[in-house]
Amino acid sequence: MQAAAQTSGTHPFRANDPRLAPIAEKVLAGQRLDFQDGLTLYGTSDVLAVGWLANSVRERLHGDITYFNVNRHINPTNVCVAACKLCAFGRKKGDPAGYTMALEEAWETAASGYSEAVTEFHIVGGLHPDLPLEYFTDLVRGLKQRFPKVHIKAFTMVEVAFLARRAKLTIEETLVKLRECGVDSMPGGGAEIFSARVRSIICDHKIDGSEWLETARLAHKMGFRSNATMLYGHIENNEDRVDHLLKLREVQDETGGFQTFIPLAFHPENTPLDHLPVTTGLTDIRQIAVSRLLLDNFAHIKAYWQMLTPKIAQIALRFGADDLDGTVIEEKIYHDAGATTPQGMTRKELCRLITEAGRVPVERDTLYHPVTRTEDSFVVAV
Ligand code: V47
Image (cartoon, rainbow, N blue to C red; front, side, top):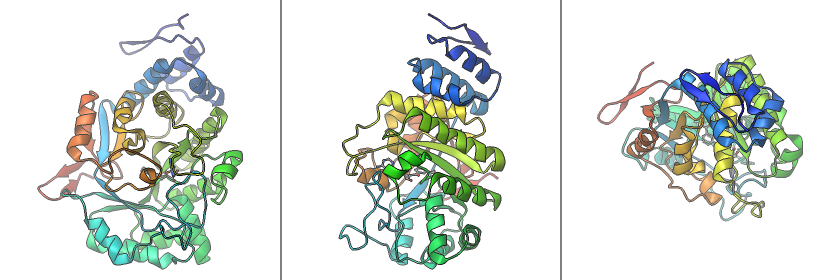
């Protein structure tokens, strides 16, 4: 049985599932999808039709352009007061496998490991019980002094809320201090899944979903841009996934401060949830496509190759994604949870993945300004 064919330009839309026809009509007319549409997109077996629709939105927004950046991850500590079941990275204080970088060590780490100038430091870590806010502000200030051109994307909403509580400051006061020391934007981690039922099992020590959203809202109102993530493929159901995406869409309607959405597939190895299976390729691809379709007010959907594998991330570029993240020197969080992807990729390798997917690679900075390379540095076109 085939749903009514529709056209977007010269391309016909065809689906084997008739429930997709009214959704296609809305998508092709640029109309917003609702909760039930989200459930249908997750529930249908016609993943190719879902992907076709997501790709049409992706091409309407970006044509063939596919973004990537040259970035380095810095995880200053893995010591964490939370004991999230989803995590293989955090260690309790006193655990011999715990580490905390001295500031000099963090600054040296920033400079090491790659011949091309990075445009972004992505800094996240554990919720350390003893490190004061000043450790983090000094860390960032020192990085800015040493690498004034590099954008600092640092601290998830969970870390911001934790640092505020420890320093006995409001979220706004904490954000002011982070801005003063040189934080430029925030990464999207820690959102996990907003459902209270699921959160109480996988990350019960973290701020709840509404606090995560409120912290993001406050950051955006102070002029910070941030990303948003969703951890999927553990014990959540399709209702939880749609709920998560629509809550992000609601905040984005209000602030416009989210740049990119990054769906993160759960890696169970070395976590207390290691009895769960890993996600399949189709689940990953569908998640990219549904995100593109429901998050109509997000400019970018990122296929984070470290998590998806380069092969699946490449396919995702034809299912709604327009960004591959970056060279990602020294990823730790996924590798502690069993990821077998390389810990970094060169610009050349990223460009090959993009070009072979029939797309056009564009190096960007964190705020999506195009980057032009000189011999040993870079210029950002603002
Ligand atoms: O917050 C932790 C997730 C996040 C596991 O903003 C896990 O540009 C799967 O947020 N299996 C950190 N996921 C990574 C992150 C991120 C990555 C790339 C780009 C950006 C960005 C943000 O990783 C955590 C948590 O949600 N995570 N453990 C695990 N075992």
